[in-house]
Image 1 (tube, rainbow, N blue to C red):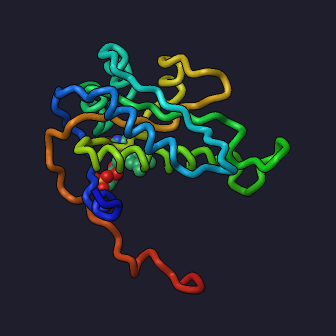
Image 2: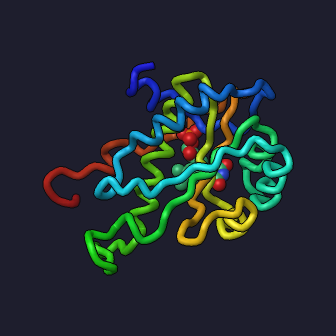
Length: 181
Ligand SMILES: Cc1cc2nc3c(=O)[nH]c(=O)nc-3n(C[C@H](O)[C@H](O)[C@H](O)COP(=O)(O)O)c2cc1C
């Protein structure tokens, strides 16, 4: 699938078939994530591929009241994105290089996860970025190493719905030329 078409036709998928996703396909979407750009190429991202039904159920419990909870429980795979703290946003030394502090790890992980969801879509798979949950509880459940945090997750599987297109702001509302206004 061509990149612009993938960007335009991707939708958040919250209902999945129980058709399994094979290892090669999972590797392909993780490869897409791996090739994302990152702060001084620090590649702070880490990914946990969850297939175990009990762990997916526990993730869903942590999500609680979230539109993606059932998807996390029922999709054949969940990918949890983590980040190493103290790498992205630094340019030598221990003081963050910009006014964004160390939040550049969010940017890097988002780039990788967006590569992943677009690659998934191009292969006929569905995903939804999920950020509304207690990341510390997820880190504890998945035994994430010290110095790393959980950022987001997505279910991964074959879509069992054709969701409506969510509207977008017009370019005239969000783009300025030369100066603000
Ligand atoms: C950073 C981020 C966090 C999100 N968190 C959630 C979430 O917790 N639960 C959920 O169901 N959708 C979540 N979404 C999906 C958005 O609701 C969705 O992308 C948006 O409504 C646009 O719809 P579309 O993806 O189908 O174009 C999140 C998206 C982003 C980018």
